Image (cartoon, rainbow, N blue to C red; front, side, top):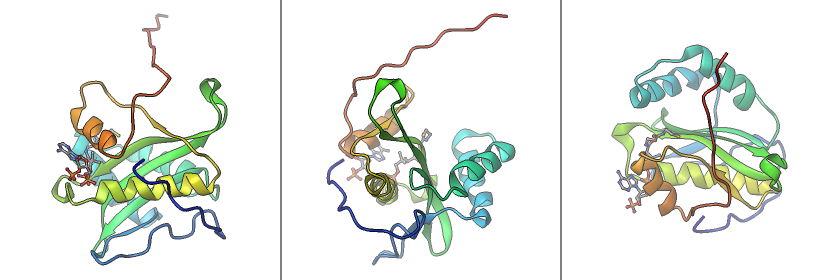
Length: 169
Ligand SMILES: CC(C)(COP(=O)(O)OP(=O)(O)OC[C@H]1O[C@@H](n2cnc3c(N)ncnc32)[C@H](O)[C@@H]1OP(=O)(O)O)[C@@H](O)C(=O)NCCC(=O)NCCS
């Protein structure tokens, strides 16, 4: 990350992360009432509407009281314009605890205005408060947009590589 967030004492793990600023953008934990707009943004980006999937993501990350699990939304004039989801994983892949970003999406009409940056800063700050000092993510090799974005935030190639194979019955 460009800048290490300043650690602060917090009460509830899911207290408001980033109050409104001059541009009116608010980043806060997702609420159930935001889900339709989150689903619509995802459907715009991926072309698939996955209601059941999002209900389960909300149960796991949105309704959690644990600071290691984060599902944040960015709102402009009260409308959801982006979201980020991630989790602190302890000692997986043999690595000390670190924060993983699983998904980040900004509505196509709201891009290039710094919203993605604000979302990543907010989830980084939450992870920092949860005690981790490393942020990781995975992305598709051919997704140049998301690679440019993460590189712009200071992320570099890490020490892990992904492997896969087809499973046959
Ligand atoms: C990647 C994404 C989150 C960026 O959101 P955003 O709000 O537009 O990002 P920001 O405005 O904060 O941009 C920050 C930096 O990212 C880079 N960036 C963003 N969009 C870019 C683009 N289209 N081309 C090249 N670089 C880009 C730039 O370096 C930019 O800084 P700059 O504006 O000073 O040049 C957004 O484009 C998106 O949702 N894309 C689809 C994501 C996706 O595929 N998700 C599924 C897998 S998780």
